[in-house]
Length: 143
Image (cartoon, rainbow, N blue to C red):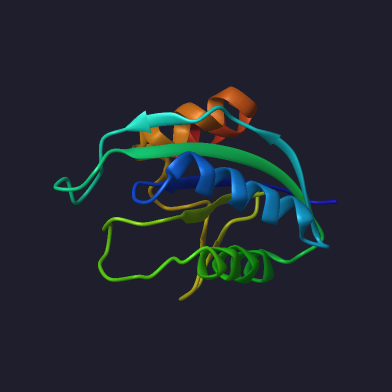
């Protein structure tokens, strides 16, 4: 099955509990199997800095979903967990970003792979290095 890497974050409500529930729901999905998950790290907000610190983590999954179908599954889990999109880079109960899917490169109006800013964000790279150093290196070396 194809492998993909996700970055998860939250900074309102109970972030550790919300991350754990997102991981549980991902693994419970019929077409997703969580292979590895990083520890949770605390990070300062990026982009919009006048908000609480974030709890961030990464996950490695196997899936038979296409990249766009996987994106839809992640968005559905965000919605189920109460994610409301008020502002770009604003506070959130949960965020699940698709960082990479195998070594697929694509750029559509809905999804860019690999994630266009992953290589610039230590809150993505640090947890990813913990579970998949080769994927973190690949993201950095494609520049």
